[in-house]
Amino acid sequence: MLVFKKLGWLALWGVLLLAACKKDWDKHNALTDDGVRTNLLERIKATSNLSRFAELLTLSGLDKEIASSKTYTVFAPTNDALNGLDAATVADTARLRRFLGNHIANQRYFTTQAADTLRIAMLNGKYNNMRANRIEEATISTGDVYTQNGVLHVIDKMLPALSNGWEVLNSTDYPAAQKAFLLKLNYEGFDPATAEQIGVDPRTGEPVYKPGTGIVQRNRFWDLVYDLRNEQKQFTIFALADDALSAERNVYRQYFATSTADSTDSIANFSILKDLTIEGYLAQAALPDSITSKFGTRIAIPKANIVRAVKLSNGIMYVMSAMPAAPQKKFKSIVIEAENYNFSSHDRRNNTFFRDRVHPTTGRAYRDVLVQNHGVALFNLGYNLRDLPAMKYKAYWVAVNDFQTAAFTQKLGIGIATSTVFGYTSVAANEFNEVLVGEFSLSAFQPNFQIFLTAANSTTAAANPIVCDYIRLEPVW
Image 1 (cartoon, helix red, strand yellow):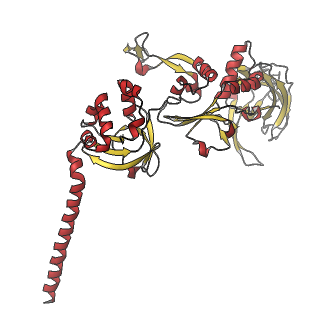
Image 2: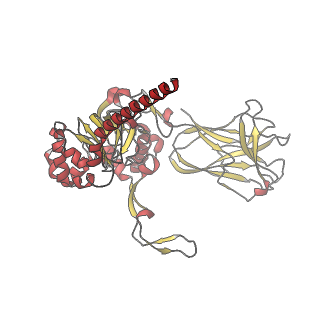
Image 3: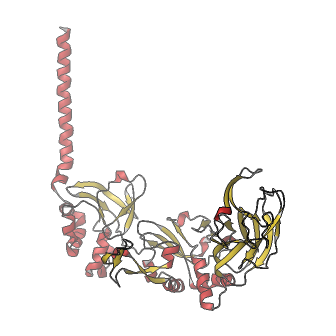
């Protein structure tokens, strides 16, 4: 009898479970059947407070796009949110498509995916930041509406198609003097991706391109600092008002003196501006007291000097009435690893040794270069330096003579191997510390400059070695 009771309870439990499953499945169908049967366009048209958005989609031709079999996420502003849309955008099909394209993303995005900020690629090539139930400045009032070909979110604000960090140069928000300088950095470069290939060089296997193809506009700021056209990344740009740029340039001219005022100003401008853009988005309310640039320069942010903040599609720009940067922060020690020489006066590779060593006091591992038994008077190693500012420097080196008991001499050649700026310096046995070689001054900016490690004017092996861990040039203030 007990067995039958147990079987009865099991049967009853099974019936209840099936009933519960059916109830849940019916609920699931009620939530999703409409989504499975309707596409994004149909769902938008069926939503009364999105009627204006639906009209604009039809007017622009993008209605066909979101009714296709492709997968999209649409962030649709309500009728009230679209009240502020200017008539000029509606009247210009290209502008309208750009605007609407900033509300449509390729593939599905749900609010549950955006616990952390998602940077979403939009149909117009721009990116928007989505986090939880927000997309940029808009709140998602109705979210995660599933459809046959994507997801619909209803939002309470428009998502304007903003300029990126380079396009903003064409706006009235951008300071004129800085714009003029940056545009001077344009040049024509070659891009094989846009060139027409007409063959292959049989000698090298390299492609041969049709002359005149693949020529694209480039800019040296993009190459050397950041490509501000990049929509995938975000940047914080500090742009200097005309008077502010002029004031900074007056401070830095002396360090970039050249043969002409124009080139001096150009180099000074670049030195100033390269430190005023950083990667990442810094909202005004969260601005720190200072930033560190890509080039390691620490610059204070005088927040009271912000003239205006301009939101960008890939970040934010602050126009500054002044943003002084101390030269002592900008110009740092130049460290030359001696083993990384660019050339030598003679081929003495068989006499050249790259030594992995450990400092006996600090335990620091280092590598130096030693050239000995080379048999050449005034043998030297040469180093190419770039962009040396005009100023005074103290020169130091670490030269470890742990291979012979006798001291020997070597010199630091400034500009030429046999320079007389410095005389010969004695390299005593087992000196592991940094040694001051002397001071020298550059009266003009040096875009290309050479220094040398020069051996004694002797062919005697014990008298003419060269050894060095590093050379350090320290600005003198």
